[in-house]
Structure formats: C-alpha cells, structure tokens
Length: 170
Image 1 (cartoon, rainbow, N blue to C red):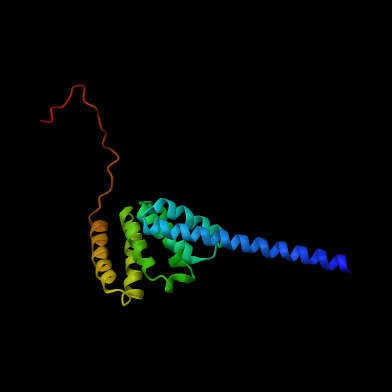
Image 2 (cartoon, one colour):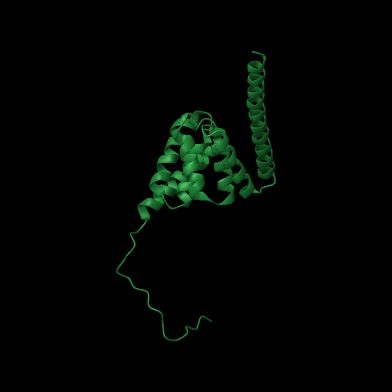
C-alpha cells in the first residue's frame, strides 16, 4: 500500500512539474513577444505569438496580437487571415478594432469587396468605440468603394514585346 501511494505521489509530482514548466515556458514566450512588440521587432513578436498560439489554440488574445505583429511586419495576407479569425470567433466583442484592421488588410491587398464588408461591419457594430477609427473607417470605406467602382478588368489580349534596340529615356 505504501508503494502505491509513493508511485501515485511521484506521478502527481511529475504532472504538476510538467504543467509548471509549460506555464513558465509560455510566460517567457509572452514576455519576449511583448518586448519585441515594444522594440518594433515585429518578426520576432509574430513568431513568439504564433508559438503561444500552439500552447493555447483557442486563445484569441494571442491570435489578435499575432495579427497586430503581422500587420507591423507587412505580412498583410497573414495578418488579414488572423484578424478574420478574431472577427469570426467569440472574441469579436473583446477586440472591436479587429474588423477595422481586417478592412485595412483587405484594402492593402486589393480585395476591395471584402474590405468594404469589414469596414461596414466595423462601422455598424463598433463605431462608438473609437472616434478616430470611425472617421478613418469611413474614409477607407469610401476609398474602397471608389476603387471597386473604378477598377478595370485586366485585358488579357495585350501582349508585351521587348524592343530590339535600347530606348532613350533622357
């Protein structure tokens, strides 16, 4: 009986120490990520927040922070996809600016139709949260609508031909 208790105690200790080490590791990852964001090292911050997302996949805080780091990094497609996860999930009320940033990411990518949807979502649901973002969202919405209305289809019949002689550009 005494051996069973000892074995149970050892197994329980190993389980607690493993979860403690994992928490320490997650804590240190988040500290490094925050320091990287503050020093504008967006690549490292993005990588650390992605690593934190592996520890807690359902944590939208890490998804939002990874999206912000991706936006700072210039990885607009990745940041847009992450902002879309936040706006589609349960955290959209916690992170109202995610819809605004999603619209920005889609506009930068030239996806004006989806940018318009994101800006309209922000303006209808969260415009009272930030006057600055609301005014900017209205401007961005009008710009995306204009760009969508004035975009031309690519003419696939045009052919680019290289000239046989150099062109004088002076």
